[in-house]
Amino acid sequence: MTDPDTNDVEFEHEDAPENQAHEKLVAKIEKLKTELEKTKAEKQEYLDGWQRMRADVANMKRDQAGYTERTQNAVKEEIIGDIIPILDSFDMAMQGEKWNAVDEAWRKGVEYIRAQCVSVLEKHGITAFGAVGEVFDANLHESVQEAEDDSVPSHSIVRVLRRGYRMNGRIIRPAQVIISK
Image (tube, rainbow, N blue to C red; front, side, top):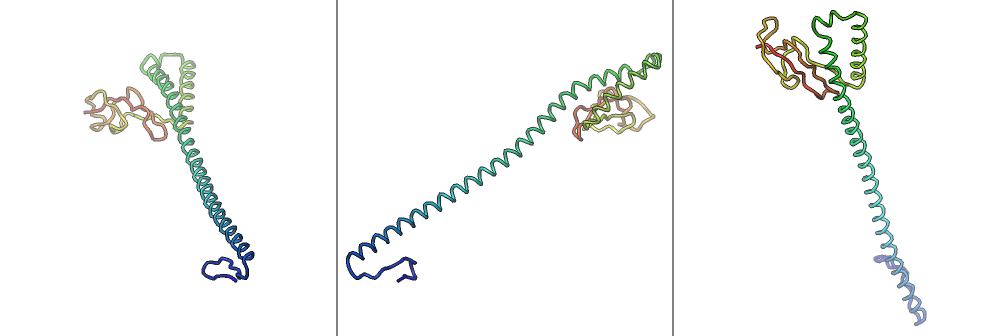
């Protein structure tokens, strides 16, 4: 006969040996219930641990991807920092009257080499900025001098001493400029 409140199995008590057998069965059932509860708790603990570990692995992968991207950008910026002075040297060499006096074929060759360097930088998201006539912006430009020049509006760039460079919108180096008063 079954007790509806406890869902335990009850047996008729006719004589002592059956009563002992009944007690043994009840004890065994209680032991099995305890083991089942313990097993359920262990299962939940293992499941929770597995889910935490899975989340930790996903977070680690995301963090590693971010770290890898930051490292790649840092290396790229360092290499670019080494290339930019070479472009500055090209720009300085290509100014003035003496540059125009150089053999035209040689001049075109040097201009082509500089254009190749610029093309490589642009391929990697690096762009130059700072041009005569632009309005001075302290976030982009470094003013090293002011000059009288009526041909451009006040606080505009009169001369670029050194180009500025940005990578994917981030300033790598500000442009050094002379601005109008």
